[in-house]
Image (cartoon, rainbow, N blue to C red; front, side):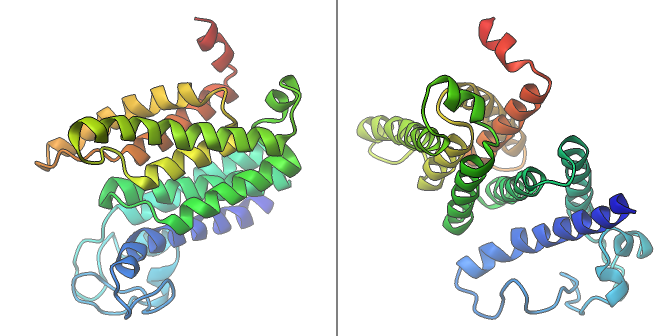
Length: 266
């Protein structure tokens, strides 16, 4: 019964992530006719307000065979994809940590990073508000629960708060320095300010020690994403933020598989 209720919650949060992904850029562009709660969800083609049954996460999409109930326009697969990903990740976190504060904070962090990943991938946009919220949640989770850095901070004999602070400084200023050197020679920015803050946030979450590994994974991920986008666009922009988040997810996966230390030794 618990898993059924949690599944509904996770699917609903996945549905809300789609709202954030599609509405935040419009709000940032100055569109005052839209916010996170108004207007109600509608078909992007015919603009008709969706029926209540169509708003049910995942089930609404399946009931309408992935199409608008009014104009038969095909609805993007990204909506049910967001919901299913949030469901699977949420249940995985729950099975690992059970009912706990760590489960809650881990899932909030995942949702924030997922939304940032998609926003940067689709729009090259990393909202300052979400970046700041990510840093705040990361700091709180480490101070009270030592989510990612308890063992590391103990090893270096510093408090989790201070270790998180060091992580932010290293993450933020490492990319800032790279951009400063690039700008000195090319006379233009090569990395966006949102990327500095995001990498500082990842440093806040995991501390400074493993940041080079995340940067390596993130750089490789960014290259793959760039090659994917290059097929559809002539732009030379690279969504570095998306790559860094993918790099962090790879780091988390390897950590849970207890492969990180072996990788460093190699």
